[in-house]
Image (cartoon, rainbow, N blue to C red; front, top):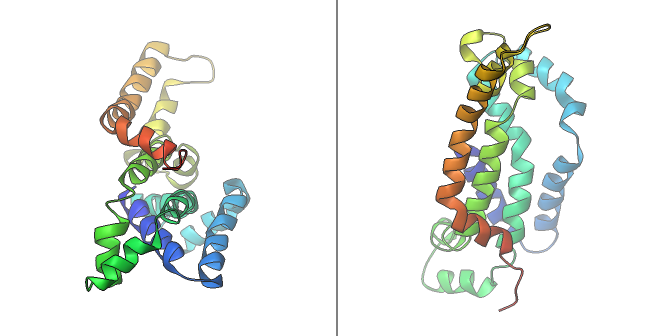
Length: 196
């Protein structure tokens, strides 16, 4: 998730700062990624990852999660960064800041609520992902928590007490993350709703 957030913030910054058609084309490329259903590209992804030796590895699973969630993270962050006044970047440039310094000092601190909302959204998507681990992971030692919860269900018998205990354990980190970032999350989803 942190790698997705870093990449998405860099791409969103480029989209917000590129003047004219290059920024619009870059945004359209990532928006097009939202239009393609994940199920439509799973077979090519599986074959490519198998060819590269990344299937049945946590590195491959992490990489596929970044690829799948990057378009939505870019979409959210670019929408917020486009609302920032260009005068802020111009003031940073007048103070001698280059593109990287402007990114670190302007484009990262100001959209903190939007970054927090995106981080929670990505965390929930990655933590609850069952489809890609089910497709890519064969080794029982590398299974994710949602995939391990399938062990408590059988064809003829389901161990409900263990299953519900596993669900509570699996959902605890998400509840803690939301409780810690709730203020930022609410500010992120309401950012831009009211004109100042």
